[in-house]
Length: 266
Image: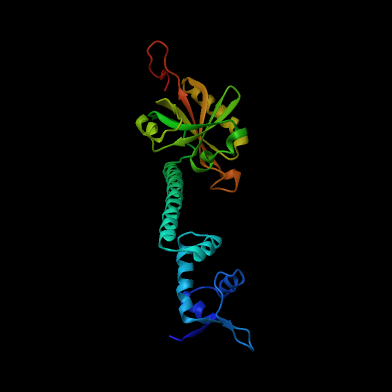
């Protein structure tokens, strides 16, 4: 190996952009040994590569350039071990945060993929559901300021002219799972629901409600007032509102005398 290396040779050796080395020079982090008198080209001694290797090592560990500068100026074995322990704690915290985000993203992906497989937009039918859980968000005024809205499938409740939002937890099946998460949750009671699909913008969803209530009446089925909407294809996965798909579910009322679902004219 040569005793003196050009900036281009250093760049090739470390697979690093020449402009990065120029920047390190300007900030005083990694300066050349000297410059050629006529060309002004930067020249480095071979033993300087150990310093650059340390800089790259620290950068890969997540240190900022300012932190690296301080580290290079003050390091000894005790300082180094202390700083590595601190950086490990920072990385683990960020690792946990990203893992949690990935879990909810994967949950939303599974929800969309499973729903898409069985979508029949012309179908109106009764479905039986177990108890289901969601994180309450509240009104649209606060919707966009909570991370739940962005990471979980959205469930929307319409009742008596009011609309409220929640973050659906499709993979949670037991109440104990929720208690371990330590978060406030609500549930949608188990039962039979009259289900259909709304296609297009949410502003037109009242027409779908009217259609479902009308069809249920024709079949002799009594429905609750509350409408529960699950956004399947929404603004996060589709740019054209005309292509939005929302599953509308309205619980079938129980017969007051028997406690069973009203199925008198199915």
